[in-house]
Length: 250
Image 1: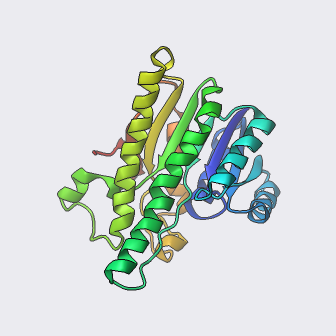
Image 2 (image 1 turned 45 degrees about the horizontal axis):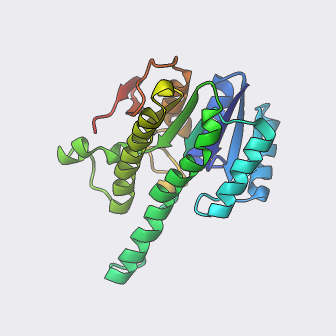
């Protein structure tokens, strides 16, 4: 059995990732991370009614006590974690362009979109090391590509903080990969780290104006997890657009 934890798995891209992985990895139990036990229970009931093999977990990624409790729960129930999909996140919108409001908005956003997935990953590393092959996927965005932004390949951004947080999250993913290589060189492939861009999907985040169905966005995560060990290098950044599974330039 492959134990997968997807944070923010009760709606949007996260919900699509859960559904996709349940169908694409037959032996998987996908643990749906939600902000509360009540939300987790509702999500699990809905997904099990569709015949999917899921479990629920209360996990508020911005709450350290919640992270510790979630790690303890997964350890007690499964003894390890095979895959962590860091998907949860929210983009607070500033109420004004006043400096104080923008500073508060950026602090709140970066805590949720960068610091929290980094700390969730750090907390689960011991359980990922207990897996025969641990994998971590940071759900990022192509807007985190400095190359594409510098070339003006992306439409104008409405959320600079969001784009900056994802560029930094990509670097955090590489730092995790480098840390594993340096700390445990004899087991440098024990955990693989990737960043993945689902693309412009129709979700509540963009008022459902995206160009892709969320299940299409989940495809990049499914492709990564369907790969064989060492087939896709650790510390790389991927997308699946127009049927092409491809690496994104930094």
